[in-house]
Image 1: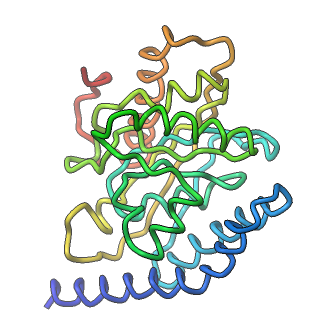
Image 2: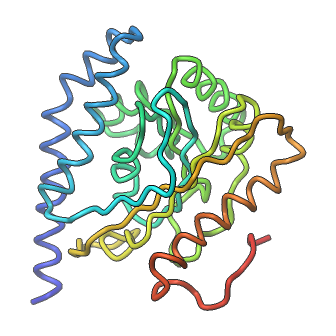
Length: 256
């Protein structure tokens, strides 16, 4: 009975995603066709409202813990652990401005959603030659337009939470190239709600911890390993602090 209810809950969740996508599609299309800077505020509020409505309609409460307030006029690169299909909307709820996501190319394939994703965010075509040059160029253009970036530095959903998997260096290279601060984000227990490949949705209150920004001014590419280690430890430390029952007892350093 429990599994059946969880599958029905998943159908409801998918219906909510689909309905909200259609509701906000005209606004997103308007933003895509008229990308003037004055419409940036609309993109931010559209995505913020869409993300919050997802959680409201599926009945899951979200608790946001901010260890330090963010500057409204500052761009950031948000780096979070990745354990669930719901990580993208929860990350959008804490952003201070419109957040352009770096996401796998599968998100760019569905007919309508893929069109929206390709035009508002940055698909990462893994294994395709020359792709990272295009990703870096698109990320730089998004930063020049005044947007923040949302990145899951593990590169894919972690199948063995809560300890984050090894980070890839792309987000840190972008941050250093453009001298943009990194905001580490610990998404505490999303794998309990909708983990990768799970054919069900579970009810569980969600907590997301936004840590203090880490400056990159003056850093060079030689500082990338140290920056990766620091961000990793902050994210893992957030999970250990706010949900020790989920954390692996042995505190580990950045996995090599």
